Amino acid sequence: MTKNPTLRIRDLKGLGPRSEEMFALVGIRTVEKFLATDPYVLYAKLKPVVPGLNVVAIYALIGAQENRHWLEVKRELRGEILLRLDMMGLTSKKPSRRK
Image (cartoon, rainbow, N blue to C red):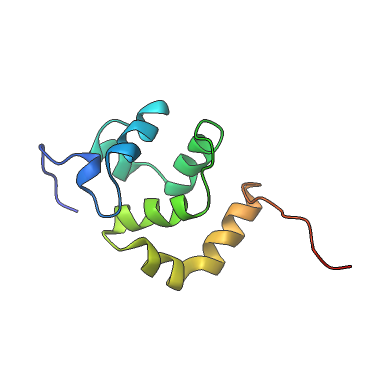
C-alpha cells in the first residue's frame, strides 16, 4: 500500500469509522501505524476492550492490511488463522453439544 498522508483508517478496504474508534482505544490512530502493527497483536489488544469482538475482525484486519476483502482472507487462510489464534489463547471454545 502506498503512503498517502490524507488516507484514513476508515478508507482502507473493509474498515470504517467504527474501526478507527476501536483502534484508537489501543493507540492506533494512523494508517501507517496500523499497517506496521501485526494484525494478531492488534486483535489481541482489541479483544479485551471491544465487547463482542469476534473472529471476523481478524479476517478484516488482515484483509485491510493486504487490500483484500475479508471473505477472501477467510476462504484462503481460515485454518491457518484459527490455529494461530488458538496458539495465542484467543479462540473461544464453545461447549460441545454431543451427548
